[in-house]
Image 1 (cartoon, rainbow, N blue to C red):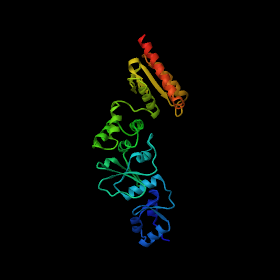
Image 2: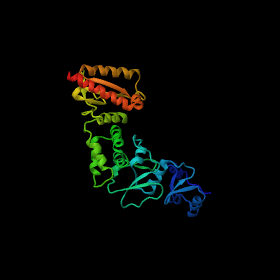
Image 3: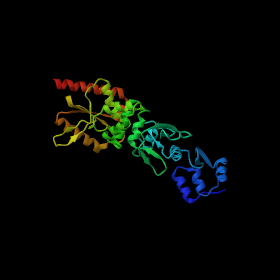
Image 4: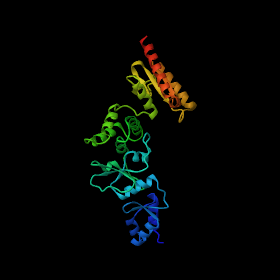
Length: 311
């Protein structure tokens, strides 16, 4: 049985086992040899002219690489790109979601094709494994059509915390603001609800808690409100009601904490009390195990604070 060169074998391995017929022919195999490999199951068809070596696992990344090799202008986007970027708050698809321009031929095989008339080079991030993935801002925008408002808000905070700025996301929104574009209305709603200066929420749990307080009728919550302490340091609690000088901190004891962090938090709380602020803390464990009860308790604390301020 014929074999491929060491150079092509290395390239195939780096592309998750994906190879094209043209590459095999250029490497010296004959058309008949390629046909025998197909009939014998040595290589398995993914798309027209694109195959996966049978000994390579059928992974999500292999499917993405096959789609990108089959259509060089294709970009993995939406939740599929979110999976590759390891975004949180997005479901993990098992098949690639591929963005292509309207003049490109549709891909065959197990892919979801989405068409667009706006696909710039700035939207494309090439990887050494042959996958071309949408940039984080473009992937974020294309996720809007697949998520509800709550999930997309949490995703927005995640992307702002790790990949992009508010002006960058607004710029993406303006560039893709074509009439009837899927997800545009959700992007508009989510971005318009936050100020440009507002720091991203540190976790989806913080976002969910503050939104629950707002839905319960608590008005005027400010995320990461800047508070200047006596020593000149400015702190930003997770949530605040500046009118009554009440602040909320959510402690993630499951992934950080310990004695040093606890000492630091207590010192900061004392410093906030010195400038007239009340700080209440809840933990991620409390919210995970008794979310509604914890939110009701916070509402009660807010009401007590309002009464104390008014007295």
